[in-house]
Image 1 (cartoon, rainbow, N blue to C red):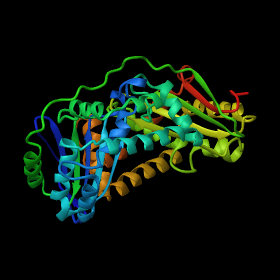
Image 2: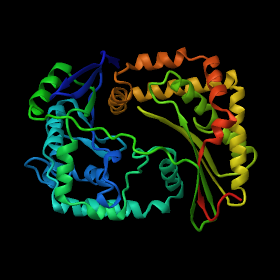
Image 3: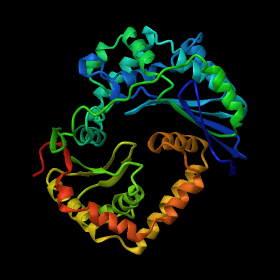
Image 4: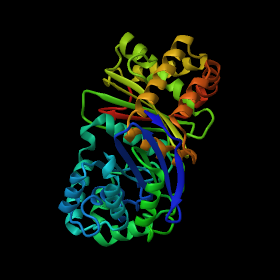
Length: 416
């Protein structure tokens, strides 16, 4: 498939649109974000969890279409779709055949402008949210990742989005409708469209559909510093789940790519990383271990997870810390080459998916304020050097940096 340069423009007084035609594609993907994320939810009993509930409700009817009618309209167009909520936004994702794009955009615009938000939908969506909240501890690894975010990130960006029982109980149709009217505005919203698409045609369609949309949503701002420190969540279990987190470069930081490759060598990229080899394979300290780098617009976070037994949890943590300190000595040429190949493979294979490409357009718009072509992203990886990665590792993998880590243990006891 060949690609045209992505075009970026605005409609409705601030709604950012990125369109990338891909010659040879037979589908078109749309990833539409509106600034109704969890960081802007009310606190606790005031309605904490409203973003997740709204993400579920907005697909339950829009405009003149009931929930069943809306779903049937999407199905007639052959649309695969989903909605989700995250820190800054609710995302509507959809993919369809090229000839269905106009109909899809019309339906999505109705979701944004005129969601029905009816009491029946609230009752069902609230019950689903309560079930998700109550089941969190049934998945200790997920629960540990949520708790590490709560202490490692500043408020209100440390919210997990599941809300609280009091907050979910406080939601009303009136409060949700008011929230949508206040927060779902073109200023702060954006969409990525990739695949079989004509840019000029899409621009005309969106200008017509969104002619009445106006205003700007206020962004959430930091209200309290990260708590950090150590947290133990008691759980009667034969396992201990350990999560460690450190501040990391944001997407626009020049060293974010070096950090990503370093993390891949350390604990990502399948089973060829250092953590898997040293902590699990050689020492058999845990049954699962790995690292992840979440790279955002305003901050980044390096998190490490290990699942062990209570008796071996402290030794597992000590081994992870030792491997972190070893990273300051640098990585080998072999490790570097393998990680580069893995990064490039993921980028290129992801680029074959119109959905992944539309998501990448939106991600770039939000995190760095512009879009990058697939070739540009690959070129950035190819330009990275071993010296850059090793210099970066030497600066960030220091004892003082590790001492500032956040730690969560989910299990029967704190680390022994």
